[in-house]
Image (cartoon, rainbow, N blue to C red; front, side, top):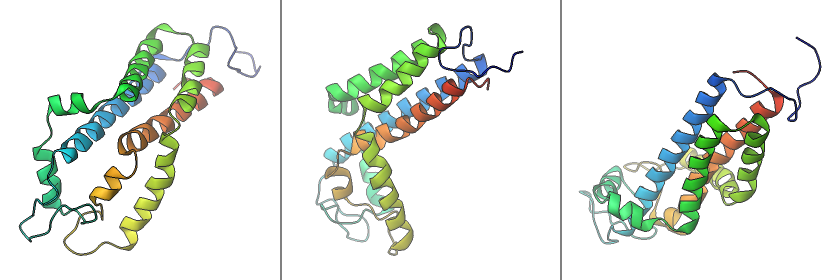
Length: 188
């Protein structure tokens, strides 16, 4: 083996099967997580504001959700509701993840590197998730009232573009990891 540096244009250096399996696992997990966020948001749309839990707390716009409220939301999750909630940008996101799975097994390392870099440009809304997610975690840790799980209200899920912010952020982290691994030419 030579000691010359590995660059993205090095010849005959494709990702190992372990790296491909790891990347495929990340892509599939991101896809499943994204679909869960879509299902949650679609079910929230179908949940009435005046619905009350056993303590008499409503699910209004600024009313903090209790664990029972989340149960009401998940009772309304359906495949048809989830599919009908998807818009063109969501379908594009899903298509790029599926393309990524295909490229993992068919493309050279350089093509995978270009694909991963393109993800950072194609889904910029996901960067908001880093900011909003950080703020939300701090809020959860510092001001949790009794009887509530994770101080979330309907406003948190409606005022921001929840699906792309929450669904694209993990994918951007995975794309960054793929870039790092592919750039360095590691054999995982």
